[in-house]
Length: 80
Image (cartoon, rainbow, N blue to C red; front, side, top):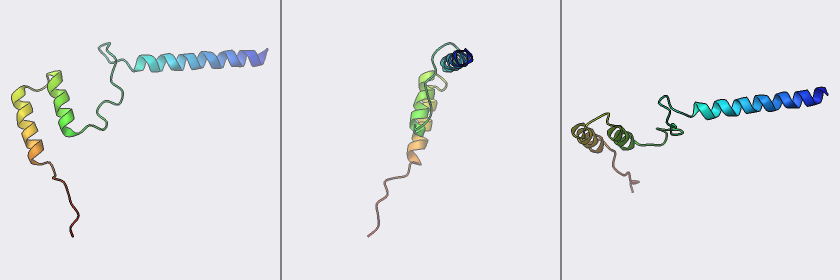
């Protein structure tokens, strides 16, 4: 009888954890947040996201993109 109660309690806890994780993935505005957003993206990708969200206008985007590309390291080749 106590083993059944223990298993039932574990199932309830597991269900609660799954529900919390499911609701935690939603953003504050109700839309689902992208998992791991911002990881593995370069500076140009982050800049493009800000432009797409309307945080910066097209002039600011072009200006910052030019700065990024002018400071981007070129390919490195081993010296002989």
